[in-house]
Length: 369
Length: 181
Image (cartoon, rainbow over all chains, first blue to last red; front, side, top):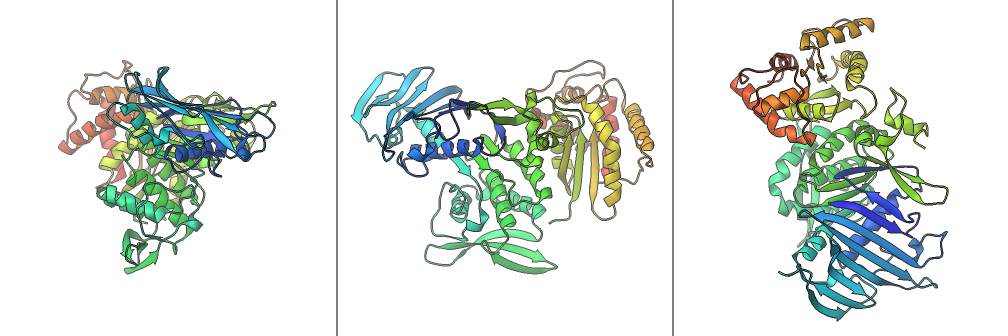
């Protein structure tokens, strides 16, 4: 699991340290950098999955440099605990003054200060798991050289880190863009989960055994819900069909015909019920959007139960009182912008609170400042 | 939505919540935890929170009991009181709030671990316990699963291992109030 994220010179995040637990709720006013944390994680995932270059719009373009500074260097550091040891990944990106080009000037992976991988000034040095030097080669400055390394028998730790990062799922559900049809299986949800049908198709192949429990969970929250099936609508294309039963009448709707809230519920329960045990780490932006009030806490309970077991880790950004009241005291982290412009974090448990008030009420009154 | 009994859990802390939810998941066929009202961590006594909220939750329960299938589960540590004394205390609070005492027909169950939930956990871990000795907390609340599983097995066999803490024996009787199959 990710123990710490350090970000410097990325939007509002300057010299920013974020400690993370198995389940963390990021709270704080708008503009303080909650979504930027998720964007950094998404950028890292894309980079380390080898599917994006450093200057791609969704990764680290010059527009992500902190505007009130003139430094051209962005730094990201990630401490990840895997198999009982902490791996530290460090990435330094230098942007040209004109803003059109950027290059990775440093990319390292270490365990206990001992190197596993180093990319510096265009040259890669590989290390074996016992830290003896391996081969060197040159690499493109515009993308992650680490992502290009093929895991093998003598760099198991490096491979473990890459596997972990490639299962970091960063999502802010936007159900209006969910499509019903999928012609392939996709192992990762897109940033807004528009490819939900393709991901569902993938996850179904992996964990067919979990479908009955998943279906029952949705029966409890969606009126008349009976199940989901995939209907063949083309040579390789299948459409998600949602089956309902009302007053003994059975009917089906395509996934893009049900309501936004129902689509969001199906996606959220898929994350905790179907993706269980797959090693996904979730970063979710306002998962409460589109949900009705009685739907929020039951899902949250399921997520909290799964975290640390079936789901290694989840980080949630939200302003919603339901999330603040249920998770805030135990795993809330308040992001605050200091007068210098720097964003700091403070555990919500340290807040001084008047007796009898709910945490959400404290926040609503602005007393968390 | 399937016709399950929506359960509200009113409790002091995460250990209470984890214990109650796990037991309901195993034994509460036809129930579904809809809401957990839990004392905010580090903000005063959990016992005071439960006692202060009980009358309000009971009123909410009564206001909807003919329209929604629901149940109220209360978990509050004895902390020096036995189950009967704690129940009497809650009954007084209810009466002070101008409400009628809890009726046998109401799906409102009050569980009072004495000395506290850790006593039950130690017993379910196979230890001989008494209701005055303090027992250690679990490192993580969710680790109570195996303890609750053990309780569920004893319930299925119809008897607690003897000698059982009197508060746990009382809880087994209290469970019948929920009317689960």
